[in-house]
Length: 325
Ligand SMILES: Nc1ncnc2c1ncn2[C@@H]1O[C@H](COP(=O)(O)OP(=O)(O)O)[C@@H](O)[C@H]1O
Ligand SMILES: [Mg+2]
Image (cartoon, rainbow, N blue to C red):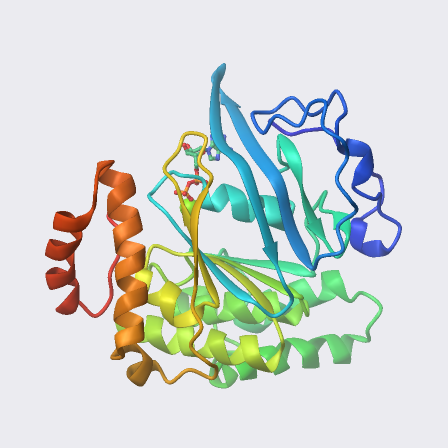
């Protein structure tokens, strides 16, 4: 259910409403249960989820998807979210994007409550969603035209080209989506997101539909861009290896309904990371086991030891592990 938010200004315009008015009001009736609490201090964080709850109503039935989700993400951090299918990972991402509103609690970006989508929080979905009747360049340029309408036509075109070159599509600017591979489409989606010059890149299983080789190439690209552009990245993934390889923190979600954050794992490997060396290290095996242990415990609802041992044997022979839906 979308909550009506009283702001008429975009928070990032510098004129948005501070977060305080929504706290402890009659609006706070979601499962997060803020009623009667004192308003929290104004957020001074880069990106923050404050006691977020989300309930959907479909066909007259209420589904309480998330509750009590609180998370602070500093600038330039790479955070991945893993959890069993349907636990609410994408819902969390769409609330940060401003495409959905929390039922209660707040998503704050630079001290302002997120109330709608904005170019500073660009999203890349798994199914790239390119317009089939536009070329690769025209798809990216459309985003640039929308975000930078005051730039000259030439500058807008150059900006779109710049980002397509950055993601390795220099030779494919004038092709249509049906003329390029899945990996190239996803690169186009990433270029389109980056051309908006976002501060936060929101990735929803961005490489899930790609073959292993293309996936690893694009992971390396995103890691490079994360460093070069000082991006903050929030990535939903099914792939534990991907989460560990890319992230500073892996956020593990409990199962739904009313899912919340079960555990956060810090990945302290320094950057830039050397893919093969890191993935073959003891540290990587440890991180991966921690994620598997968590997910299997949640799935089976009992002590994980025997299950995890079996899975570790299987994991050792698998280059990339997907979480079973
Ligand atoms: N717009 C919506 N309306 C109703 N239910 C929804 C909507 N979006 C998601 N849900 C439900 O919320 C739950 C979590 O969905 P989602 O966030 O997509 O899970 P995940 O990404 O972890 O697989 C699911 O039960 C899904 O059916
Ligand atoms: Mg999802």
